[in-house]
Image (tube, rainbow, N blue to C red; front, top):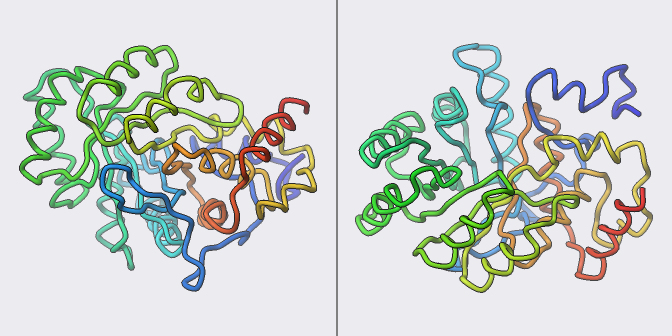
Length: 310
């Protein structure tokens, strides 16, 4: 089943672009000035962030292609128009940081920007150089959040980040992982180090984080960013040919993307999710998950049972 009646499926289309996205109807759930997006507090400070952010892996890695840059500028504009704030990137993502900087210099109404990137290299001195280069690429005086990507040489970089935070050069610091096999080491850093944010994978099928990482984040007062919310688009392959249950209306859910995203951000320990897309219409639709009601605990259990039974 295709999303728009075209011969190419949504997953096939996004795979051909090397991108992520949300398979939802055009224009559903756009945030408006009268109805700001749902937001959650950063435990360390109480600062509130919209529950839907934006990732940039693959999607903004377009190099110097002028046409592709122009299209990414439109995507970024739609993100801010929809009430978005958190944008996440990494030096690992090819030209994504450079393209983000290009677009941020040209986008309107970006005052809400919450800039988040990562350090991803061996050795402390290289990390300092890399983070300084990221500031240049983004055009940022300082980042809101600097994260240690996949715990690479985390002890060396954490020393730098603690110092930078004390100096006011970065507002928050954290760690990330996108590999379940690293959860043991990740948990140890969460439990014993002075960080503010954690980022890891969690979605309606990949719920390992519910056992320890999410409860530990709540216990330690850590903000949580969720990556791979659509399992690299595979959730649409699995489920988009099935109808949404009628009871999805109870939490203002009109499509599968909202179903997947609202499941994630309704977890009490989750601060925001960061889906990515290359298309303006999909960006507008993604932001719809930050509108209306969220499922309560019983509905969340019902959502998980429903997809497991399909």
